[in-house]
Image (cartoon, rainbow, N blue to C red; front, side, top):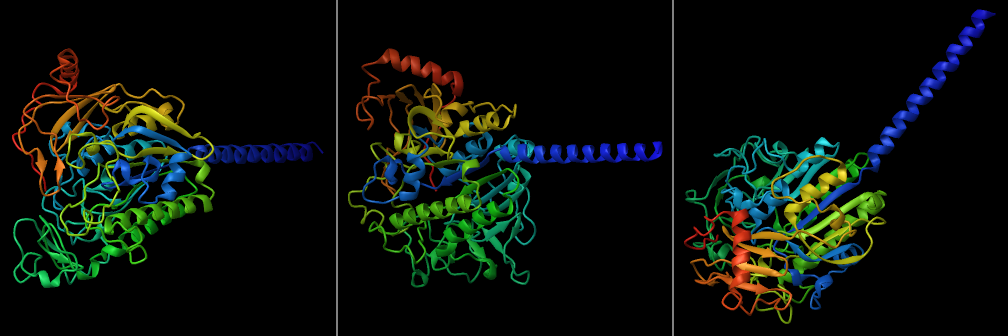
Length: 518
């Protein structure tokens, strides 16, 4: 009898223990799922005035408008730089790109400029239990020098914190024109190896310059080398025929990749860097969108991007993830119209103003170069709010670290989580901005641009660089279009700004002799 009672007690104890273990496991899984998914949607060359939520009337962006108007829309949101590679470097590392001399517009064969030992946004999130992925444009270099595209390309995104990567190496207008998944070229035939060279063409290969009869998109400047899909590119490429992309399918390809990433990893907290290619050149909308905007291909690909984002959000909603996903949306730099191809971007612009109220554009130290569309969205957590807080993409890393409970700190990234969540309207006090290695300074409502040599207007793209022989000082609160230079009439403020700038930047900031573009 005693033996029977003892057995019953042991059975009951084990049952309670197993139930407790199950509850603990359930609790752990539940706590794990409570961590919000994080998605950064990064578009390419989209101007502040290119979207409805910032006042555009000639082009419709209903999906973006809905997210922005139901989230925190920033009137003072900045990229760090007026060109792509340095902005992407800052977003992923939390460091100003001028601290890294290699962080400038890169050729498609450039080595990786982020150190594999360096802290990055995906690496920080991975340490906190997130599955991390990138789908879309990379343009931060690959490999260590001479890349063999016919073998696994490393180091790359997977070596700086991304568990999964499906990318194009550089830009849509540069070779190699292939997709790369976790370091391997997608669809490559080993019997047709890829060769890439940015200095000289391969014997017998046609070019945009010598074979205009093969083109479906005519080059304007700088894009007259190898021809892929009827489009002349920057750089020379040979082979890899089965791996070449069709530009018109690129938006759909990246959308599908982003959607599949979400559905495959929905049971664990995930981070996705969805780096879209629109509206960067060549502007090649899918046939479904051709002519839909009335503004030419540039307008059409903006409509396409808006549709893609709408479809991506539908996927989050379908999978029951939307209320547990923080979305950060912004652009790598400001707008440009003619950026290398004849595509009617100028001719069909009409009354549309891509830069909004700002002066300049891509490549420029004036506001339109770095003052970009920027919002955060988190259904049920973030309340609709229009914020005047000064925020920068360099702040994303530190702010998300606070969100997920990481103690990671990075040199230039300010922790502004409550600002990004709309709980505080006070952002950073000051910010250094950059355009093609030149830097300027915003502090409060004021912007100071030091004197720089070089062209005042980039004639090929018809954009003011902000180069001047004299200091420039603007009060954005009173002069958003930067028409009234106050450097001569407010020398005390200029001196104050310069001292603050040099404390961060140092005194050797003005060593650029001429502007270098593509």
